[in-house]
Length: 633
Ligand code: GAL
Image (cartoon, rainbow, N blue to C red; front, top):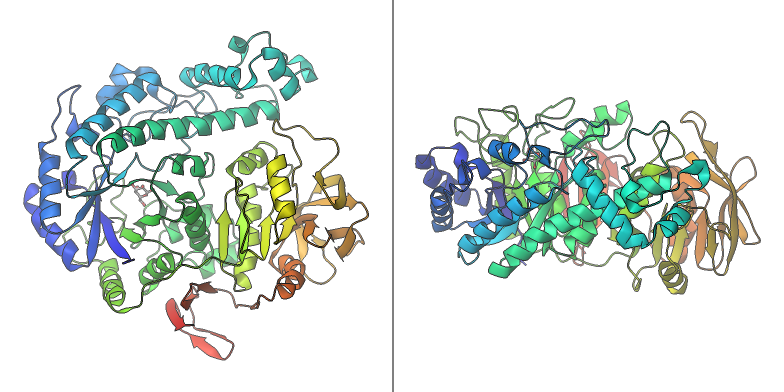
C-alpha cells in the first residue's frame, strides 16, 4: 500500500480566489488528502433551513480538480448560534451543574434529542449531496469526541436518558438496588424515575452509580456517532472515520470504531507533553521540543486496534501549538520523525494540521504548513522531505508483534471511579508498562478486551483490568502465550463490587489478594532485583510459586507455568526485572535502549527513532538527534 500525506483545510476561512492556488501548492507538496468542512455549519446553514451548499460544491470541485481527495467532515462539533436559541437546553452541563456556553466548540450534550435530530438532518443532507461525489474519498464524523472534557454531561437530557439506560440494563429497580449495593447508606430507589446523576452529592457517590453513568455516557457517544455513520453509509461507499484525541479515554473508542471503517487520531506530541504524559519536570525539559518518545507510539498502536488495522494520523502537529502550557517550536527533524514513526506503526496517511496559520480567532498562535502570509512555514520543508522519501523508500510492511497488551476503556472508567490513591489511573499504569516494553526495544500490539484468540503472541500483558469476564479469563488461561496479570486484575465484578472468591480467581493459579495499599509518591516499595512498585501494591497469599519478592519480603510476582500475577504498579526497571525471564524463555531478544532511542519492527525493516535533542550511541552505532534510521532486516 502506498502511504500518503494530507492536510486540514478551511476553505471558508479564505477568499475563493486563493483556493485553486492552495490546491496546486498542496499537490506540489506531495499531499493526497485534504480534510474540510468539520466546523463550517454556520456557513452551510446561516439561519435555520437556509441551506448554502454552493460554496462547498465549489471548494470540493477546485480541490478535486487539482488532484486531491477530500475527507469531508460533518460539522456537528460546532452547532451555530441559532441552534442554541432553538434548543437552549442542548448544551452540556458540567459536574457543578453549570451549563457550558456558546462561543467556542463542542457545546452540545450527546443526549439531547433535539440536537441529535438536527445532526441527523445536516448529515443526511451532506451525505445525499456528496455521497457519490468522485472527489470525496473519505468521511469524518464530528471532531474529537470528548475533547475539552465533553463526554460527560450532567444535563436533564442526560438524566432522562440515563434512567432509560438503567431500566434497560437492570429491568427492575430491585435488581439495580441489589447490583449497586444501595442498602448501604439507605440509597435504595423505589423506581427508575428517582435516579439522579452522580454529581453534587454530599460526599462521594456510590462507585457503582458513577461507573454506570460513565458507561452510559460512553454509550451515548457510540449511538451519536452511529446515527451519523449510518446516514453516510446509506449514501456513500467512501470509508468513514473519526479523529480521536490523545489520552481521551472516557468513552469506548473500540465501540465507536466498530461503526467506522478507519480510526484516525490527532497527534500533538509537544502539546501532550506537559498535561497528558504524566512525566516529571526533568523529562518535560529534555523532550520539550520533541514530545515524549513513547506517547505517540502508544496511540498509534491503540488506534491500529480501534481501526481494525486501518488507521491514520488526521492531525499532525506541524510546529508550535497554541494550547499547551508552553509552546516551543519543534527541533528541526521532528515533523519528519513524527510522520515516519506513524508510518512505521502502520498509518495509511499522515495529515498535517493545518494548511495555513489562521490570522484570526482562537488558534492564531498555532503553526500551519504556511504562514498567514502564505509563505512556507517550517513544516513545509519537512513535509516535502517525507514526500521525496515516500517516493523512494520501500513500503512499510506491517507485522504482528510477539508481545501484546490489552487496553480496556471500561477498566479506565473503573479506575477513574475508584483510583484508591491520588494520581493513580489505568491509563497511567498501562502507559508505564508500555514504556518499559519499548525501553526493552519491543514492538507491541494493543488488543481489545474482547480478544479471544492470542495466537502468535509469546507474551500477553493485561495490567489493571478491574473487571474480567469469565470468557476472557478462560481465553487467557487457554492461550499458548505467557499471560501477565495484575495489579487489580478482576478486582471488581461487573457492577463494581468485590467478588468472592476474592480476586484474581484465575483457574490453576493459586493466588489470592489478601489486602491492598496505595503508596505515597515518595514511598515506593523496592523490588529484590531492581526497580520498585510505585503508587499501588497488593499483598498476596496462595501456593503458587513466588518468582520475585519485594525488599520487605512480600511476594511481588507469583506464577504458574503460563500465568504470572504482578502484585503492584511496577516502574520501568521493575517491569524489566519481571519480564526478562519470560522474554528470555520465549527467545525474544531484549535491548536496553538509552533514553529517547526507540525501535519499531516491521516485516522487512527495523526503524530507529531518536527523540533525544542530542546524538545517542547504542550497540556501537551513533544516532543523530531527532533522526529516523531504517535498517533492512
Ligand atoms: C485539535 C482539533 C483541531 C485544532 C487543533 C489545534 O484538537 O481537532 O480542530 O483545534 O487541535 O492543535
